[in-house]
Length: 321
Image 1 (cartoon, rainbow, N blue to C red):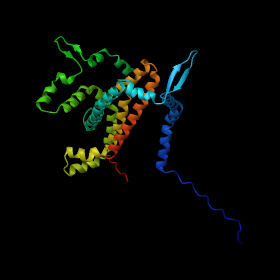
Image 2 (cartoon, one colour):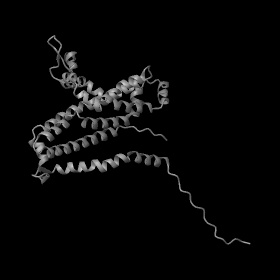
Image 3 (cartoon, rainbow, N blue to C red):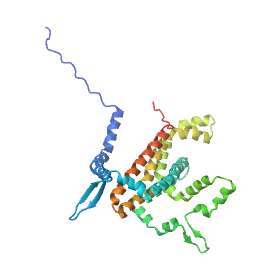
Image 4 (tube, rainbow, N blue to C red):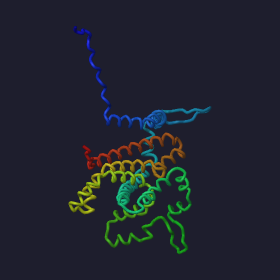
């Protein structure tokens, strides 16, 4: 006897999410607190700053503020009326054009050295990362009020009793300028080298995070690649330029972008200091400083985009499949 009951089709099993999708979801969950905080806290502040840059703000009797639309007047005043903004912007960009490559190169050099097998490697890594810890929070406030640091940053320095002053210009003490003159090196190159050596303390302080990123990139390179280079008879110099440098080129891009943003937003940045002084001292300084800040922000974005585009053309990404 045949069974006329309808046979139900088996239910289709839902396909499990792939590993890439699971990682993507975990990434979104990781950045979710920042995204919520940005939308609730920072975005309204940014909108008010942009809005105020097109207004003239004045206080009225009895409390409150009166907003008067002035269009681009605050921007034109910042560029053409204020005598110091453009000059400070150019000098600050010129200084950072020297500091940023020096920080990236120094951090890469130290990461390569600290990645070699030697006794006390962990101690040396901690020593070179210590300035990052000391330059944040409470320690940074103590350092900003350090009398010795103010003496070292001054032009006269401290008199040691011999008639000469011990200043932060290390290159002057060691008389490297005469050495470069005897080598017949161009004046521009001499100025760059002198500036980098005199700023070596600041460069070391700002290289800790970049050093860790480079170390992570160096340790991700398979030792089998270096073993095959040794078997082929490649020298250490050839191995660095043919293997190490291409393999960590993505880290160079990351560190370049990070260093640019860190330099442009640091408290010691002279452009940031100037904008803060305009906000606190000048009449209607809150709106003019907002206009300066947005021009500075756009300039930073353009520089980051240009550096990222240039570096991306030389970045090598290793295929894992």
